[in-house]
Amino acid sequence: MRAVLFNPAARAGRASALLPGLRRALPADVALHVPDSAEAALAVLHALPPGSRVVAVGGDGTLHRWLPALIARDHELGLVPLGSGNDVARALGLGREAPLAWLSHALNAPPSFMDLGLALWHDGQGRPHETPFISSLSAGFDAAVARRAIDGPPHLRGLPRYLWATLRELAALRTWALDITVDGEHLHSGPALFAASLNTPSFGGGMPATPGARTHDGLLNLLLAGPFTRGGALRMLPRLLRGRHLGHPRIHTQAFEALLILARGDLPLAADGEWLGLARSVQVVVRPSALRVVRKG
Image (cartoon, rainbow, N blue to C red; front, top):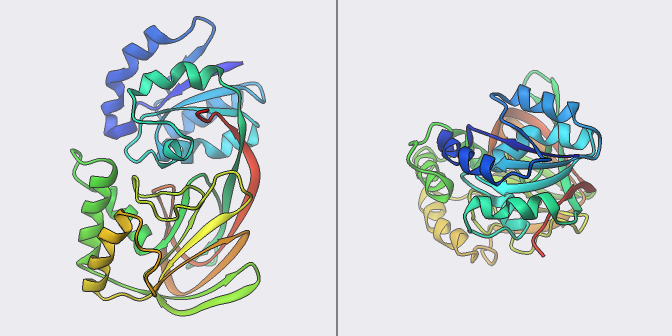
C-alpha cells in the first residue's frame, strides 16, 4: 500500500500552501492523510498495513516525531522535503528543486537500507527514556541552540534560524563536565562545549559537521568540541559552516557503534533538532539498516 502523510505544521505552517498542488499531483490510488497532530499521524502510521510505502511531506522534525511508528510497522519511507533544515533530505541526495518534484520519485523508486541511531538516556530524576533518531543527537551547546531555535523568529528557517539561535546561545556560553567512552575505550573527561552523534553528514540546517558520515555504513559519527571561550567559539563558527573545523585541536571526530556520556549536572539533549530535555547519562548506539528509505539514484 502507498500513502502520503502531509505535515501542515512544517515550515512553521507555511507548508499548507502546497497542499492543493499536492492533491492535484497525487495518483488516484494513493491515500492522502493530513494529520493535525503528532498523535494523529502516529495513529495513521500504525493503522497502515506493515511494510507500506509512506511518503512523508515535511522535514527533519516531522521524521523524528513519526520515526517510532515507521520502525514499529516496518514501513518504507519516501520523502518530499518540506522542512526548515532538511538534513535528512541532503543525506538522501534530494536536491533543492521544488518539493513536489520529488513526489513521483518518493512514491515509485526502489528502497534501500538506512542506519538509525538510538539514545538511551536518564534525566535528572533518574527516569529512563528511549529515543530513536534519524539524523543527529545533540548534547550540550548544540542542543541548547536547538531549544533556543524553537522560539526563534518565524521568518527565519533552516540555517539562518540555527545561526540566530547559535549567536544568542554564545552570549550565555556554558560548558558541561562530561565523561565519554567510545566503543569501550575512554575518550574524554572534563569540560566540553558539546558532543554530537551524527548519522548524516550535516546538522543544524546544513552545517557540514561530519562530512565523512554515511547513512548506510553501520556507524554513527561523534563530533566532540572541547572547552572554548566565547571568542574562540565565535571564531569556530565560520569554520564549521565551511566544513573546515576538523583540523582544530579542540575538535575531535570519530566513527563509532556505541557511545556513553556521563554528565556531572544537567546536560541539554536534542534529537533531529527537536528538544528532548536534560540528561545525566546518555548511551548512543547505532541500529544498522533499521529503516528502508528512498534515495536519489
